Image (cartoon, rainbow, N blue to C red; front, side):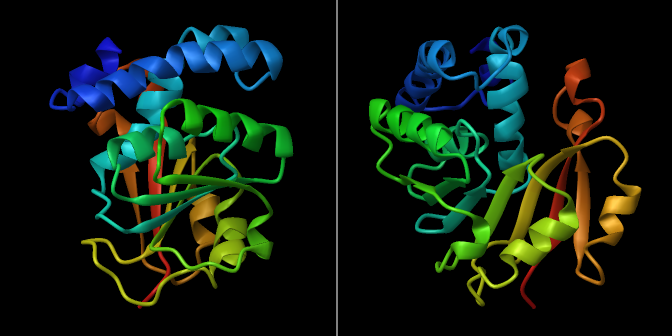
Length: 209
């Protein structure tokens, strides 16, 4: 937890308590379903929770905003973001049912009333959202194609509604897949000093005009 408080020092006590519970919850679930490698589970707060919360360094989700976490896996980045933004509505989806069961169990244990989880593919969704977030789920071109019909046409944030995804490495070719859409890349090394974040980035692609 220390690493979270270093970068988010003003978290209310209830949010700190929920973030602290994640360690126990994910260790328990990782024994049943291999969500995170044994090496990485000891680095849960740096490589999964703080990595997820990086999105909060580029946008503050408004109350009642609707956010889709596409390919959430075990709940990243959606669960940490839902803790940080308790008045924002999150839908966490994944095509693997057992992972959604973990998400539902974690959300219930933390009493996250702003989280829903669904075993579904992006192409089957019939809802609209302000933002789609994801973490290393698919190439940018696929994310654009899968979600282009899922955005609310009006916006209430400084960033217009769009995709916000956590990526790594050289994105030169991948960025071309966004076509002529407006986009911006944020380097996580500008927010966090740990070596893990040296090559990590957030990519924003605007999906409404």
